[in-house]
Length: 148
Image (tube, rainbow, N blue to C red; front, side, top):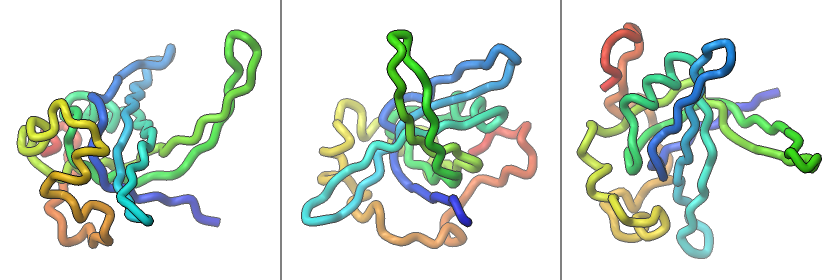
């Protein structure tokens, strides 16, 4: 069996960093990923990162940044305070690659909705097949360095 997902998209908001009671970092953000069907559509995918990766994402990513996320799909349930059962589907990221330098894309998209940005930006071919070996990616061999 295989559960792998690779997504390329833009953050819809700044990552939210929290810590578990045991002190483990967890960051969440939503990724806007375009797809073509009968018309251009955008999916908004919830992403969860843990530990050092969560801290890197919270410190160096912001709304509008283009990233590649690799991980697995997770479906979990929880119970609300009213006793109702809720289902959540999210991507648990094992690797997040920053695909542009800070400031090169986020300011261009301030105030635009992700749906509109898919129609009038220079990334209109977002969603086409990409070979990640051809993209200038971050070297994570030393997690103490700034990841871009």
